[in-house]
Length: 502
Ligand SMILES: *[C@@H]1O[C@H](CO)[C@@H](O)[C@H](O)[C@H]1NC(C)=O
Ligand SMILES: *[C@@H]1O[C@H](CO)[C@@H](O)[C@H](O)[C@H]1NC(C)=O
Image: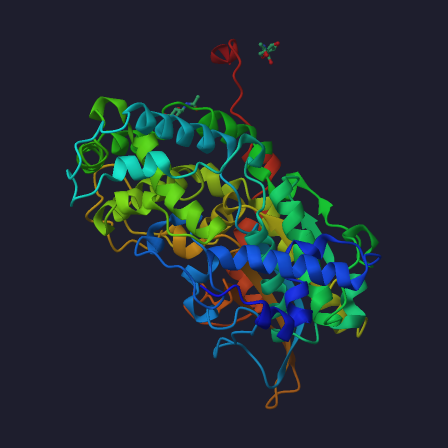
């Protein structure tokens, strides 16, 4: 495998902004920056040749741990080149405003996941050498390979954004800026509005996105510290981006309710998971009683983490085949469905404030445009979580299957629409594009809207059309816009011991 200093020197401008050197301030001597970039590119290439991405047959089934490029394979040849959906409006329509909801980029496992992985790793190491009979599995002992495979995740990493995650954001910024040059113009830079969840991975995602934009405006210049950028650092707003933490009804009825995820728990002990458990116990040569669905799931996720974070194909991937992966994907989707999707009404209703916030921005922009005033916020970027996007998409009626996802209909749901890996991979993004269109036939001006999910036009749930008049869209969602108020939706029914005397 080539160590490739040559490509790094060929495009120092691009390379310089790729590695961790992006964090160095402008005061650092260019030579030092270049040296750091070379080092980081060497570090990268010892694991993965650029342009030769590591793939795993299991990748399509990683659910919320899916890499953005696995959900968008068109990006692989050049992740910085815009991918223009042919359905995107142009011609007589000009973009007025872009409101984007962006999930953070690739992240480390959480401390909880790392704890379980350590437990599993310990289990394998405790088997001792020869704990497994040599030659039991196709002539090689996978359990021993896993016991010897480094456990490179530590508690401090706890869900933080990784370098690959910063790259996800920089590349997304570059693509969006090229796709909508009038909105992301240099003049508009000071008017960008960034809002973020308080979680590190989201704040850092916002900062990396800004650095990508800087790279777009000033190719070759190291970006300043985010705090010194004209538009300032992202503003934290958890009521908007983590509405689920602020919704009492959701917390009581779902989050802290031991029986709310009944189907998830039932599936964990159901026949599909039991057969995986038995198979994995045999493969790793550990007692089946030492394993459980959570440990199996963390083994599967470790394959995804090693791939997304380290760019390596890990022996953890060899534990599973495609059929196992489909079952484990369903387990992940079941949880999202009952906790963030259609499982309970409150899951989506808790996002009403965010929905209304988006339409308030669009309303304001249409008013300003009608009065020929400058648009005060042409670009609004909101950084959150899969848990921010899924409820909003559910509120809007997307990816709704006829039958609910349950512990008992895995087979019937094989072709379900609710597949989180397609909807909310790392760096997933939902964009509301507001356009102003001159209608040649009538003197009337029109505002049109398009939605994009992961840079592809998302047909409207109500019409299946790829574009809607803004007024029609508001009309379709008028009930939510007028009568869904998070404060009311999230109120718990009064628990008053004396209420039955009323
Ligand atoms: C917990 O969830 C179950 C199943 O949805 C529901 O019947 C029950 O009322 C919930 N409990 C609380 C305290 O909301
Ligand atoms: C229940 O409601 C009654 C009547 O409104 C009120 O007087 C009482 O203080 C309430 N009790 C509790 C525990 O909230």
